[in-house]
Length: 332
Image 1 (tube, rainbow, N blue to C red):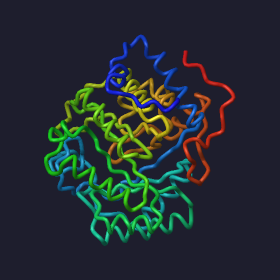
Image 2 (image 1 turned 135 degrees about the vertical axis):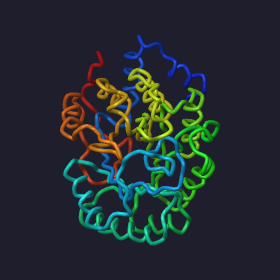
Image 3 (image 1 turned 30 degrees about the horizontal axis):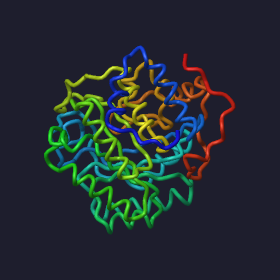
Image 4 (image 1 turned 60 degrees about the horizontal axis):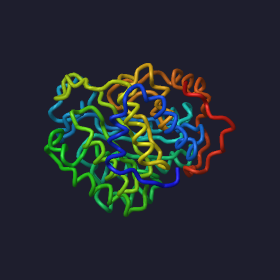
């Protein structure tokens, strides 16, 4: 709360926290979350604008060239489909609409198409826009920024050491390069990780340290949803308690950064999903890219039961811009 940056030993102690101390850990973490974000929750809605057809071999991904998963495959969606998704985001109180396209990187024509849709969304709905289009060239990133894109998602996913175990068609350095391209274009960085792919605690700590150096604005924390037909289809290493420790670590290591519980939360946090929001301040609502999430109604109910509040205003609020809560909800 006073700006201390965690060292590796402190990070390790959080991930290795005894299960019987989880409530104490959550209570401490929530004090930090409340200081920077109050009781507010920021909803995101994903639109899979282009599915499958990807030449990369990311082992966790159902859309990769080596995946045998039964998914829909289609080229980039037209304006009507993307606008319908944006209107759906507005209806579900999602302040940020995420346009995601599979592939190594977009063509110039695809970038121009996305730019046109983003301008229309901004004019009609005023949503905060995040795009995830793969590797970007500097001129492509600048066009996206000029069109009004607020933020670009490009996840590090795992540590540089472990990266060759999950992908061989590009490198960790390639991902960092794109994040720097985005930063140079003046857009915010959204970058996170996937937990549960066989990495060690030290790999998670490496990613956390690298994200700190990149000064990201938002960190999505994905928990592996092992999809049949992918190389990681038999990976089921996580339990809800460890997932909570990871979320606490992200919050304590990045106290003023938006932490989002992303893919795999329903499968891995299960009955303890709500407890994750004592650390995180953001959620994806509804479905993910090729997997289903729980219904928006259950998310609304979960937020209400916690006594938290969904952010519904359209402007982009700074982390410290929350209204102080009168009471701190009990954890136990």
